[in-house]
Image 1 (spheres, rainbow, N blue to C red):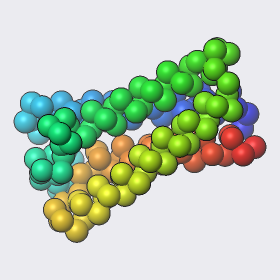
Image 2 (image 1 turned 60 degrees about the horizontal axis):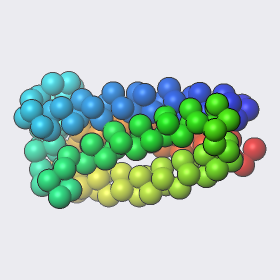
Image 3 (image 1 turned 45 degrees about the horizontal axis):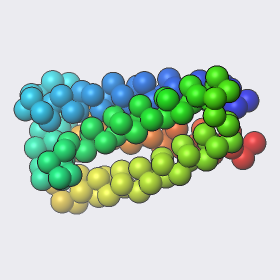
Length: 139
C-alpha cells in the first residue's frame, strides 16, 4: 500500500468515525436512545459520569479528532503538508487516543459493567487508523 492509498483509507475510516461519534454525541446531548443495538449498554455508558469531560461529551473530542485526521490527510494528499509529518501526527494523536480508549474500555467493563457497541466501534476505527498510519510511515 502506498502512502496516497493509506491517506485515502484514513479519510474513509475517519468519516466512519465521525458518523459514529456524531451519533454518540447526539445521543448524549439529546438524551435519546437512537442507534444502540439490542442488549447494548449505550444508555448506561453515555449516561455515566465518565461520558463527559468538563461538561463536554467525550464523543465530541473523538469527533474532533476524526475531523482533524481528515483535514491532515487531505492536506497531505494535496501536497500542502508533508506526508511523513502527517503520518507522524496521526500516529501520535491516535496513540494518545488509544490510551484514552483503553481507559474507557476499562470503565465500561469493570466500573459500569456495560458495553457500548458504538463506543467500541469508534475505538476500533481509531485503532485501524493508527495501524494504517504506522504501516505507511514505516514503509
